Image (cartoon, rainbow, N blue to C red; front, side):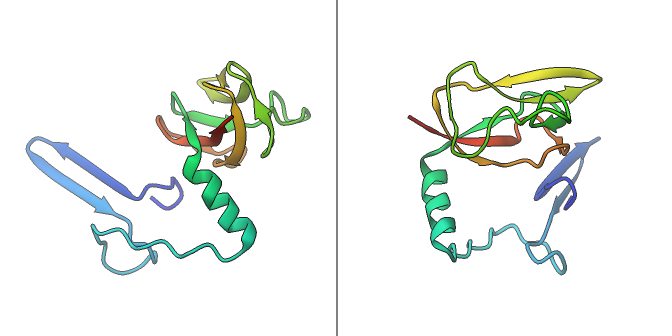
Length: 133
């Protein structure tokens, strides 16, 4: 669960249900109540938290591998702070050897790139936080 970034997983089959919740400390008993977030320590972290509050997530439309550039030897499509236009390519997701371009859904400024390059992503997982401009 930790490798995939999963916090909670619920499976139901044949009338039986199993629910797993990852504890925030990584050990001990799982809890259904979320733990309060610690306040950001630095000025940069506080500003990032403020921006993230007004930002909208661009999510993955599929399961695959997240790539920030078209090829390993090419520059990333976007960087934090870039202003992107609707329809601009943000990244590609490789699924079954097919490269699928993920485009910006609206005009905005990249606040955060949520996923590390080359990491697997799930359907609906946040890829970018973009503040509309």
